Amino acid sequence: MGITPGYRAQEALTGKMPMTASVSVETPQAHEFEVRRVPLRQPIKWLDRGWDDLKKIGMPGLAHGALIAILGGVLLMLGSTHLYLTAAAVTGYLLVGPIMTTGACELARRLAAREPLGFDESLQALTRNPDGLTHFGAVLAIIAVAWFVVSAVLWESLFATSVPSLAVVLWGGRASATPAQILGYLICGGVLATVVFALSVVAVPLIIDRHANASEAMRASLRAVLANLPAMLVWAFLIVGLTVIAFVTLLIGMVIVAPLLGYGTWHAYRDLIGQQ
Image (tube, rainbow, N blue to C red; front, side, top):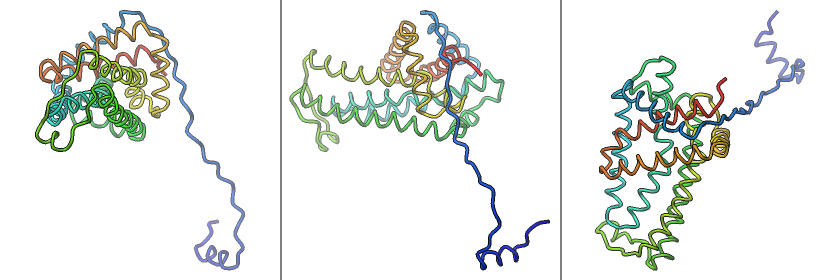
């Protein structure tokens, strides 16, 4: 027999409440992902499969590539007034690159699962595990901001000149540097890019496909890199080479390169992480 609201009110007034059962709150179970070893040439197969996906998916993937290219173009225009701004903008753009391929990874996942493909459907990746994506994106954003701070220090120490003022940002200015100074600057940026690569090689697919949180996805990525260093060097070389091509073509090539790398990342995840 149920308890009436009047009876509950009377109990509350008299201080006599019925005994209640304890309620246990379950904490989310931590995921432990199996990391596989792959042959040295496997990254070439990831790109080959990614190219097949590019042809099958078509316009939705190219639309993501166009958006990424437009964003890069805007950053380059804003930073074109000074060498420091250009270098910082390009590096920051590349550091947050992994999170920008989320839509392409979702399209590759949907293709493998034989789910509907389309630009609108690709945006559902944002709702599959929003907390994981938000936290991972925040980590990349913090790294990018840290690079801007470090970049300013490097600029002043290596090039013996201050970072550009607001007037230089608006109207432009000149900066000169020796090849050795530029090399030192690039090496420092390359170290940070290597850290991002190691933390993100399979992070986005794990987050959207297996609902991993950001820390689990980054740990799995790092383990995958450490277990497959030769193959990961090949994969990093391919990513850098394609990215250079995209920039040499004034980001027009990014329309193809961005989704291609996103699809390749999905296939890297499928080979590197054991499936359920």
